[in-house]
Picture 1 (tube, one colour):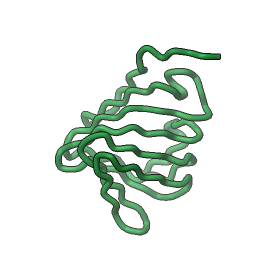
Picture 2: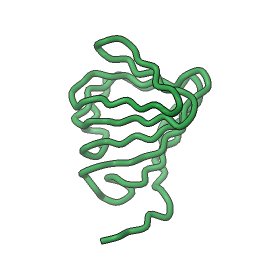
Picture 3: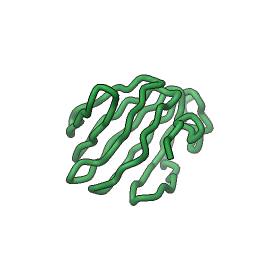
Length: 117
């Protein structure tokens, strides 16, 4: 079935980050995949996590720094990064902030992220 998604579901999060989910558990009640546009201000960060989902991060502007067991990778505008389920990662916004698209398989859910406190 073809379905137009005319507006995302805005998901409130702390720290000034904005999440607009187009497909996923909140916007479309889809557990298979989530697609969300993120906007993070300079200095934004989140706790490390070892999620139960693969994640593709496509940076549209600014940059995202991803810390992982192998070190740290800066993902610039026009680049993407793939992280596999179970890998411990920590995301931070670069010095100019970041606008990016996150695709999670299966769909993102807080209880699947396994964020560290």
